[in-house]
Length: 606
Image 1 (tube, helix red, strand yellow):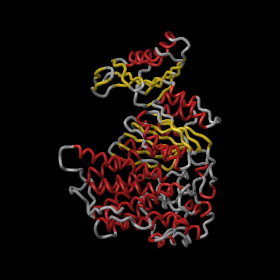
Image 2 (image 1 turned 30 degrees about the horizontal axis):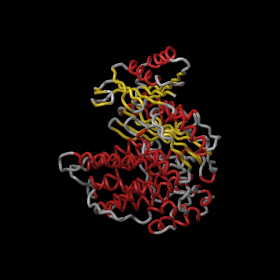
Image 3 (image 1 turned 180 degrees about the horizontal axis):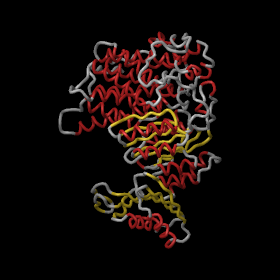
Image 4 (image 1 turned 135 degrees about the horizontal axis):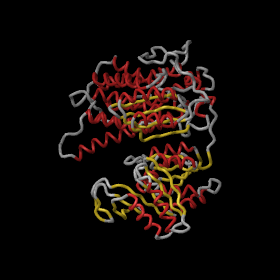
């Protein structure tokens, strides 16, 4: 459906652009995932870009909702909306391309937030696109041509040469990006061998296409077929194994069926025919990597490490140098005390420790690339066999993520006040790469989100069973009886029974005064929740935890599980273990460290 065109880039235009970009990436996600071969062929660039923009959309919608709830008639300003867009993308950035996209949006916001008017005209949009491309290039430790950086630079160059309103500038940027995207296989040998264009650049073309639609009300021709057209052209040019080996996701339209047409067709012939392997008009800018990239080999880094970091500029400068020595694909974006750090390394612990030395890292995500297959490219990469069964679990802290991971589960980290979206759960299910998946939400409030993710995964041919675990300790109980060799239904029934037989409790600190089932609590009170309801209000963590444990064991039990958060007193676990030994014969106790899990203590009794 055509959108009502926006004359100026104002707050409403930012909102519209974000929404259209999310829709466009949603349609193109599988195609972009399928052509993802650089810097690591892990097949998730489209998903990462989608999740990054989804976070930006959420932040912008929150700003509009906040103004709607206020008493004044004025809505958010351009600076408000652009700032929210950039901040949302920063805190939700996923993967290499998602992190770079977050910096592109931040670069635009820095220009758009600096004006005194309610909207920006074509000149303002040109400046924003130029600053976006330059700031993204500066954020990458070793810029490589033939990537999203090249596409962004070409978009900015084309925009700067266009005169007219925002619609004219946006269309010029889109066409410049599309033309640059078609040339990427001639700039990166790994793309040429696989017969594909750069996946991150393809995603940026989709985002710029949404910008054109925002200002013109019409979707530009060629957005949906950009990658397919260039892939087909590369195959026709005799690229070894191009058409046969180019990875195509299930359900993705083939290059032949897609039918290159419109503006894409005029660019496809630019891929072959460069005798020296270079592309005409390639952007060169400050910090360009002079020696060019080498194709990733099987000995590439084993882990992707991403975290948000609260740190001063000087500390981040030192961090860049240290991480650059540890690995590759280093991208550090952000500013004003908040940064998003992305790097590929062999020693994930060292990368996190470097962040701790620089400031306060949080929302830490560590992904193992797998058994070497993601560092091979195109025709070299053998298809990875799906596992028969996997477990995907939402966990509240890094410690539990490690525990669940050791047990073979694929984990999604839920941070206090920032529950994962259904798209993130779907991504985890795909990452598990199994025919059958058991999904453990480990939070009563995530049940509907998990159900939506399960339904989406089923449409992709994955058999998913959702066990409605309401706490991570119930998930531990379920995982303890998990046996992949059993029939799927039997395994799910056994895991569901174990989770249901586990009572759960939480000890936390009240943030403000409120009414509870146990009476009125004040800010700073220690709360003991049993099965989700406040049962105890106290002033001492250890005493409150003991009362909660006694109430739970009064109904019987054979095993007590204690999961300590980082802020829990050191002596609380020892005290509770002693209490169980002295007062409850034949009851065993196991203690885990949960890390930054939001609550001081989780208790499970089964």
